[in-house]
Length: 333
Ligand SMILES: Nc1ncnc2c1ncn2[C@@H]1O[C@H](COP(=O)(O)OP(=O)(O)OP(=O)(O)O)[C@@H](O)[C@H]1O
Ligand SMILES: [Mg+2]
Image (cartoon, rainbow, N blue to C red; front, top):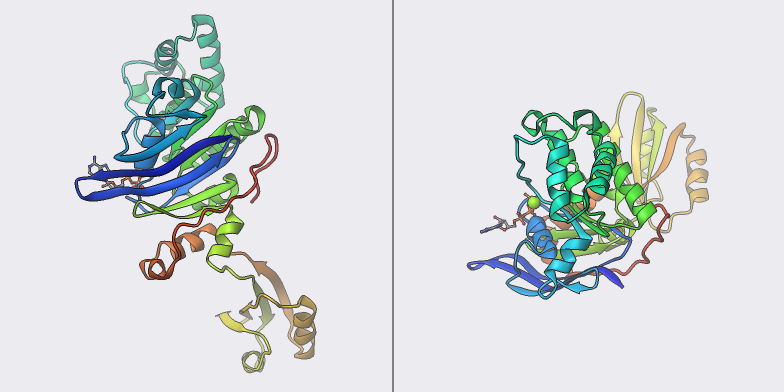
């Protein structure tokens, strides 16, 4: 059963299409990262999936419920961290969470215990009784995250969860979310501009551009989509004849960087035999200092796929189906 499905989802504002024919599935237990340039439609999509914004057309199914028909049921199984959260500044963190726990009809002793656990999980235990007005931006974000988890949700929607957090805070929150995913099988759907984090944290990634899903799959699927062929970086000591020898190389190579000490060149050749390469390096008497494979990172993939000139030649939406990880398994990198 799919955790989250969008079927031909659309949102228009007048004649402007903010979200356009969006169709995708996120499996139960996945950690899905939605990325895209500013204004691509990520927040709009997320709000339609959570039922806080009505689509112009199309359908969303979350945790097996059709959101148009059963929005109340959906609200009991999801948690949502919106792009911006309103706070009651006169309350303290504990009171604020208690207020929301009561909205979910959670009984007092259970609510108090859950709130203590949650404040601890998001690293706010020491500030539990300080007025929210005095919270820093990162602390407010942590409180908003705790609020999104108050009903022990099966599916978490997080719109830029680590925005405004310091590096340690970002790591702590990621660790907490990974634990939730591993221990309780919580499905996580997040949007973020922190692409390095998305590439290590999410096992499925969707790229939204001008309201359309232009790619969807694992990081490796996305690499294949942009023909991110294997590249090898070779660093050799810079000698008088190094550059001229390189120009006669039997491989498809490009010089990347030349310093007084060294020359870096990149070999882009899918069928390269490492032994052949090493034989040639020996034959030419190069002094090898580094040899490593370079895999295209998510930033490069993102820039390539969302580049307007690339877009003209790109194929339509590609949905790759990759197996969902089992609960307790680290998402593939
Ligand atoms: N109420 C509205 N009326 C008109 N246009 C809107 C409205 N809400 C959003 N839009 C437009 O829809 C598009 C998508 O906005 P959205 O907030 O979903 O982008 P986003 O991908 O979340 O961007 P960001 O990375 O900046 O958060 C934008 O062009 C935005 O201006
Ligand atoms: Mg947004």
